[in-house]
Image (cartoon, rainbow, N blue to C red; front, side, top):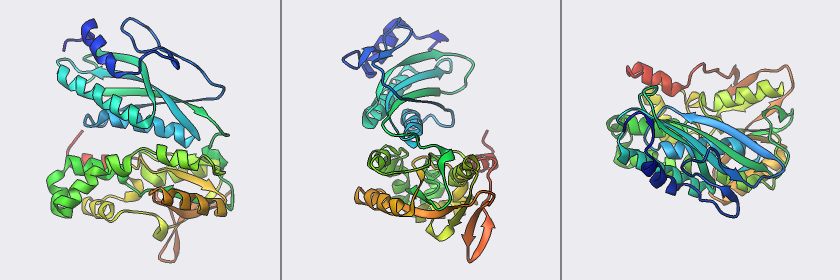
Length: 334
């Protein structure tokens, strides 16, 4: 494919994957239209995130990470807009596959992909998707600044979930030797089940009185926890033994010399609530097959973020870069 806008015929064919105009979408993604028009609501939640670290399953990542931001704020995502930048001579067949991937992920998430922009440009050397999601709030927002002393800190799923799916895909032979063929397939399958999205958690937790919410991504759950503490001006005491780390994730991180607490963790939802409300929320999640655990408690302002390890209270490590990036740098990748 040559640089510049896509040929109209190609664009019109691809746009069949997006949400068409109808009762809710007044103007959908159409060749020649500058924007989409949808019916609005009283309280909108807006977010934007690019996907730059992978091409495989890039549509799934674009939908998940943007929807996760909406859910972490306490909202329900509804609309998606994408900007796709493609390098010159990018195969049209691969572009079609990306559009199908986005469509499938959007349908699974229950969001309407209503428009955006697609362009071939020498400014990029591989596919870049920058997506924007729009959702609606039904309750007060779950701010990262809303954690208060005495509340429990809860996390769903397990640490380094997303990181392990990436490592299993990029280093398949090594992970197969470590976990066996069945274990390797299982880790690859985490991308879909339990998934790197938190929409199921969000829908279950709508009826609970949560305080703070956060979607830990780069820098793992440790970075997410530090961000909650910093924004709320509180301390946090974690119990290492209560932090969920899947045995396969632990084995992969140990093998590659990574700390699972500092590795990509999309799919994990961090939230705070009163101890009783946290207990009820964890039970409700478990009934729907979503693992969740109270991993610590919020402490007084002025205190630090510490982790209880073998009877000692230690400072929770801060990660300047995600652990996966350290692995890639060690392997000589850009």
